[in-house]
Amino acid sequence: MSISRSLIAVGAVAMLALAGCSASGEPEETAEPTPSAGAAAPEADLKGVPDVVATVNDEEIGLEEFTQAYEAQLQQASMMQQQGGEEVDQDALKQQTADLLVNNALLTQAAAGSGIEATDEDIDSVLQQIADQNGLGSVDDVVKAFGDQGLNEDAVREQAEGQFLVDSYVEQEADVQQPSDEELKKKYDELVEQAKAQGAEDQVPAFEEAKQQLADQAVSEGESAAVEDILKTLREDADVDIKL
View 1: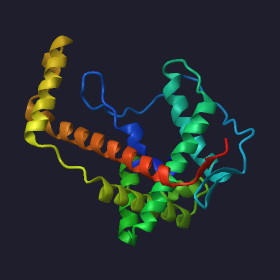
View 2: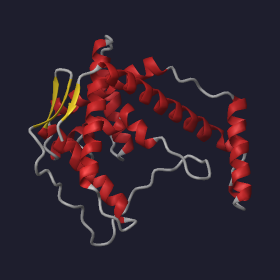
View 3: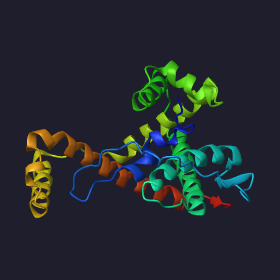
């Protein structure tokens, strides 16, 4: 089974892209993109990409790390865009991938400087989360899946450790509160009004049924906004040079 070789998309940085909602106001369900019949992902165009793609303070983001992340992003983007018959803008995607890696480096550096440490149990919890998200049974299955793609166990656990540090740092800095019942009821009433305007009121579940989904959406939106604020502050104080 093939899963993304980059663990970045599991945690906090990905919130910026994943915390979306539909036009009706309901949280979107993440659908498995299905490529058009016979369509293949384009070959990664890495011509002209330098050996050092970016520097973040004293840390270099090398071509190998960039390539792994970019190929994963390209595969995902191509599957999504094939549904609409569009071509992937690889230049824009390369810039987006570099920004993602820079953001991850900034958060990783800040997390390391905060004194947060990860135990073996913490690392296993990150890998188990990946297992659950990809329909794998255990941590060992995740390690094997990455191993089949050329990433050894030490490298997998090192990336998972970094992801735990980032997630813990963001949670520590963000302090996102659970929404109150009153706030959730307001969101629900807005959803009902939108559904009425679209003639789809009968499709809206009862408040108690929708309550947890609305709460998850609110927390996700709060976390995304917090990550944006944290990264804005970190970038202002950092020496970042993207060489694309």
